[in-house]
Image (tube, rainbow, N blue to C red; front, side, top):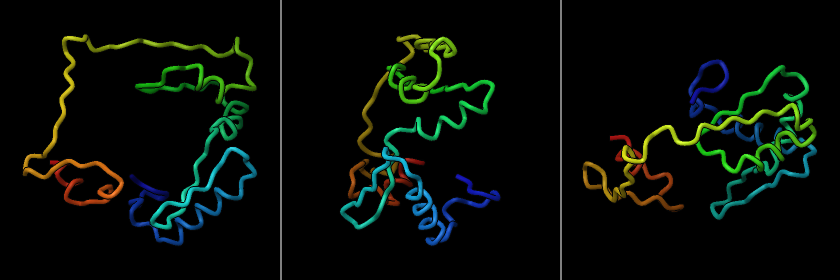
Length: 135
């Protein structure tokens, strides 16, 4: 992921992350929450993205939302287009584009070098698990 100016987002200084967090707190949105995790880190969670979406609705000629799993769409349209006339919103859905016979769900317990895939809170930053996933 790249940040502003094309630099790698992981190269941002800790101060830049603090500034971003403080800027998020400066919004007067009632729909945001600050979370304090067990390892004493702070996170800002936006519960209603529609607050920030309103500015785009006012200035854009058209907005296209594209995604893989966006059902039920009623939740998205209610949050993002609540102040917008419903007759101006057009929904289009393709359903599944891959035939069922071409799908297979498998559970993979270990990677190619036999490292166990354990995706839990405690192993979320484990470089061995992340490296194994990328092999």
